[in-house]
Structure formats: structure tokens, C-alpha cells
Length: 387
Image 1 (cartoon, helix red, strand yellow):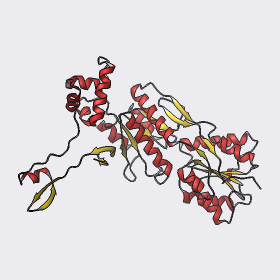
Image 2: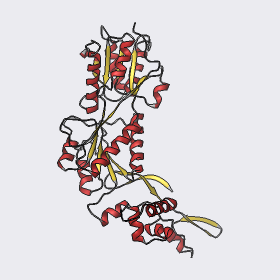
Image 3: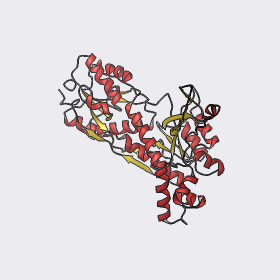
Image 4: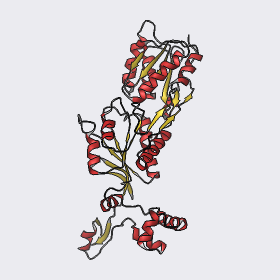
């Protein structure tokens, strides 16, 4: 049994189990490995292992196939004791329903599949936080009996085309939309088609869909910490501000400074993309200013890593000459030099809430709740008193 990703019309299916069987027979004292059809030529038939079926579960329980199916589908006319008995038997023999066959037999029913279209333009594929978030989405979907289907659009392809293909093929029940932007064409299309979806970040006040957001004061712990250390010139390495989450963070940055009677210096706020190289270049620009900031808040830990690199290239000590705070608390943050002070943002919590809210709106289209996640400040050695 091996886990793999197999191509489908819509992207890839994560976590499908593929059974590969090899038949081996001896001929003239030599071992041969090949297909069962080939081995039949030599008078030996080897059957490939097949996945357990509903009939196998019924045989285990002594119930009819119909009763077994109704129990696995949670029908109310089946007792809780029988449902538990059938579920235990299914788990014991490794039975999983054939979701695609079920969809073909009953058009219009749930596919138990969730779509995730990843844009190569804006995703932080090299960012460890993204990898952990993707794992959390896969795990949470599986825990709820769903597959997560991934797709990436072609180069220079309209971002909605991948969604259109998936909707036309009825492959998924809804979508997780990451990196939502203002006037997002993906959101506009899904609304027009009445397809369930959830976004990471609220992009407007129209509502009509659930969203997982950060609290309005998401950057306050970082700003409060730096101000308490005596910093007044605090700069910011932002992600692209058209993204909803970046917009929420920059608003929190301004509010938090204002509450301390500090006005942010526009020249000290630089949108720096998502990656380390861009952040290093932006930090160098800030450090070359006549009155450079004494502290920086970065919108992700990779940007903070770029800031650390730029400080070193300018011969500056962190935190003696420059304090730096990151965001996400990726695993590598504690191993940076110096270990990074950062806002912890659990990818497991984010993945769990995104899947939970999507499943709610799939079950009830009227559901449009917002969930708010509060980051936690983790103080390490990259922040210190202002000079």
C-alpha cells in the first residue's frame, strides 16, 4: 500500500491509496515479476489485492448490503448500536467508500471532496508555514471524511478558470480560498455560481460567505512589546497590501502605534512580497534612510529572516542596533541567529477552522460566520531595548 497523488481532471487528489501488486513465479529457476495476465501464460494466476467493498463489510457484520449501507450513511432508522457495529467492522477491514462511484450513481449528491486552487503567483510555496497549513487542511478534511483536491492554474491563465473546470465537472462540494484579495475574481465567480466557499481573510462587508480572520488587534502584542522596550521609530515589512490578511495587519499596525501616540512613518512601511530576498532588499532601503527605524515588524517569518540578513550585511547587531519581530512562528524561527521574536499563528488551528467553516456552509448555505484567531507573542532574542 502506498500513498500518492494521482492526476484527475481537476488537479490532484491528496491521500488516495493505490494498491500495487506484483506477481512472482519461478521459471527455469529464475524469479519473474510481472502482471497477473502474464503469469497466466505460465499456468499460475496471482490475484492483485483489491480494496475492501461494502459487501465485505456486510459479510463481517452478518447484515444485508442495504442495511450496511444505511448504517454507514448514518440513517436515522438504523440504531446507534448497529451503526457503531458496522463502523467498527469497516475500520477493521480498512473499508473506505468509493466517493467517485457514489457521485456517478447519485448525481447532485455530495462528493465529499474539497477544492483548493493554488496560485503560483502569490502562494508562499517555499514558506514552511504554507506547508504546515496544507498538511493541516488535508488532515482536517480527512478527519471529516473528505478528500482535498489540489489544482494550480496554467501560467498566465485567468485565476477563475480552474474553479470553472472543477464546478463544471462537479468534482467538489466547495472551496477553500487562500490569499483572498480585494475585489477577488475567484470570490466573485463563486458567489455568482452559488458555490460554497470559505476565505482566509474577509475581503469586504458584503458577507454571504464564511471567513477565518485574524483579530483586529493581531499586531498589537508586537507593537506593545517594542514600545515597552523604548522603540518609537518602528518600521514594517508588509506582504502585498491587496491581500485581505495583509490589509487587516497593516490596519492593526497603525491602530496599535496610534494608541501609543506614535504616527507611523510612511517611508518606513514597505510592501515586501512573501520571500526573504525581497525583504532583505527592503530592509537595506530602510537602513539607508537618514533616520532608519530602530525596530521592524515583519508580516511573516521569512520576511523577518530577510531583515536579519540585511542587518548583518550592514554590520548591525540584532537586537543591539535593530530589533525584529516576525509572524507565524515557523519551526526555524527558534534556530535563527538570533532566535526570532515572533507572533505565533498556528497553521493547525487555521486549517481546522477553514475546513469547519466550509463544511458548515456546505450543509447550510445560509451560514456565513466569521471566526477570529488571536496570535500569541513569543519573545526570543531578536528584540531588545532601543538605543
